[in-house]
Length: 260
Image 1 (cartoon, one colour):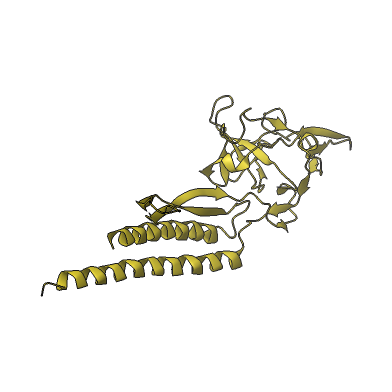
Image 2: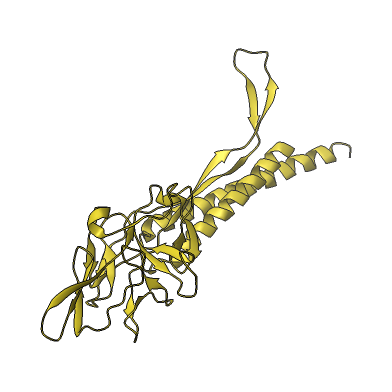
């Protein structure tokens, strides 16, 4: 009976974490470039009751969380008509950098392409981080009358005489294992050795085998129908585990009352 109580407690803890994950997914259903997370469970230890039979007799001791994974499937694209709103039509991430960080420090990856141009002509994120080109340098488009960004990720500036010049190429990073990236907040990811043993490698869109869409944003890949279904399952699982604890407690109470 005590085993069943501890099993029920472990199950309730796991479903609490599952509800935390679901709640975070739902709260970011409209976050640009957000990638939902999923949780998987696995059984805990098993106690051997006897080895005398043909098959081992074991009683499970509950469950535990096996992994929390980020689903990096692409979200749907939303047209905005703003030239500096970019989306990656394929694999890869934009590379941005904290302007106050020295050298290669403060570099992050993101799928959120809601960029703007500062008064100095720098292409930056909503947090003011510089968007980097294929050489790992901030993109600056000052000195041009106008500019456009094509599907190859080329920032094409038009001079006063009408001449068009490729001012920069949008930098794209494609880690071997995107699920190994560490979330930093603000729709940013930190590079890790698990995500890419070779470190951060920045390429242009053509080298990365992808294309850039201008005037559109990649929305969250959260499916509300799926999340609400998982929420119901988590709720019922939590209730069932709490019922296990209640039933075990009732049985223990019967044992205590035997002497009366």
